[in-house]
Length: 168
Image (cartoon, rainbow, N blue to C red; front, top):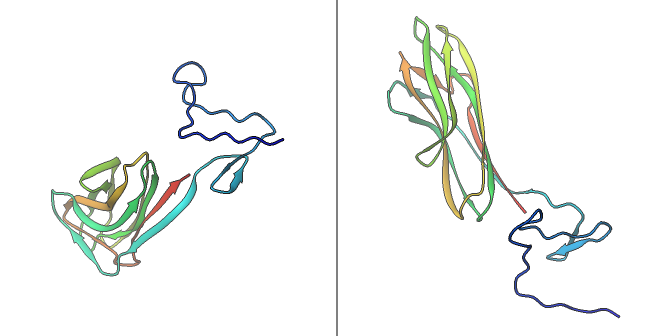
């Protein structure tokens, strides 16, 4: 004989070793939206990217956007952001520049510095896990600053920024 339990909210205990957990005993399965899962993890909800198609020259003490992409996410989502490409020093001496990822006007992770010899191209790669976001649209960007004398981005290849939204 099957039985049915109708509830509005299902919550685990508020305290103790199993605080805020709902435990499904071994050998049992839980179905959500018609899909039966034995393991619950994050899945990819969407991917967006932007590929820079023209040079961007940076010579400023203020963080300057080299490339950006916008993504609209659900509440509680995690976004993995990555930016990669190359920068070029076309001056006659060595050049250096700081760079970092941003969400809107908020700096993410740590900044890095790249030193580039005259006429050389140097690769860069930044990545960051941006977790537990509120629902909304965010603009992620790769910014550079304090060029001495300046750097060009996209001289040899097309730098790219990507965002992947993960959720349950």
